[in-house]
Amino acid sequence: MSFFNSIGRTMTRSQRGPKRSPTPTSATYSPTTEMPPSPVLPSPRTPPTIPKPLYLSHPFVDAALVKGNFKTIVMLPKYVDIMEWVAMNIFDFYTNLNEFYGVITECCTQQTCPTMSAGPTLSYTWINQDRKQVHLPAPTYIDYVMTWIQNLLNDEGTFLRNQRMLMVWLYLGHDFPQAFPSTVKHIYRQLLRVFAHIYHAHFHQILHLRSEPHFNSLFAHFLSFGREYELLEIKDVKGTSAAPVGVGQLWEAWREMGILEG
Image 1 (cartoon, rainbow, N blue to C red):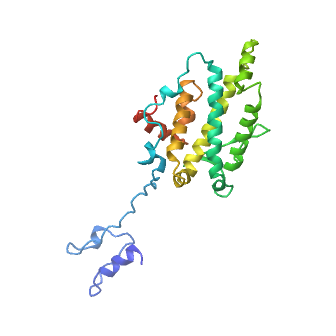
Image 2 (image 1 turned 30 degrees about the vertical axis):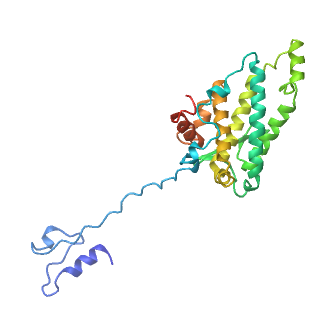
Image 3 (image 1 turned 90 degrees about the horizontal axis):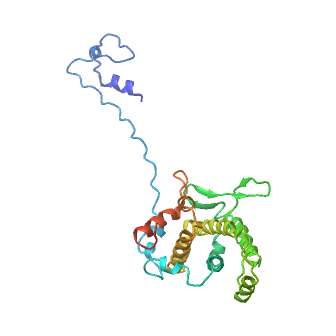
């Protein structure tokens, strides 16, 4: 029944008044006639709230093997070449992250992770051979990243991981390649994306394995080292306002807790 039809039914039928106009006016009603209730306007819809990620919730956010600030761990030791120090740590970060991903790889499939997601509105893209940005399923993206890094680590012209070979290399007056710093930054950016995806899509599996202290400590070490040697850009850690990186909030939480420095 329409709103105006409901008005007509409230009027008495004993006395037939003048023909009513389609739109009620003040003359239509006597002073003793009750005005019909005003229609209730629907309240504006509030956007659905996004639940807080588990990795930002207590006690998981402060679960760690290492207590205190990571600054002392990442400082360059005396008499150690900075390039050697960076190369060694890159190898360790890659190896440890690859082991973590290997444990949860059965849960990261093309069906469960059709994109390389790292936040509610963020999915990373891969640049293909035609220099075009394409969306890839997360396992495909991560496989590309890890294979590319593994090939670089196996290239003795880029990473000299054998101590004896390194000493001979430096003794002969050789140096790390000129492109080494930019290569390392690229590696670091891609490893960050793998960390970000695991936190966003698979942290509950990390919890199931009771490995959150190990994974948090690895990531905090990774962030601290990257900032100390200018391998990480803040924009890569936090993303943009339209597409924030989930772990950007973890970065901020750890800074407030004194685990990381700005």
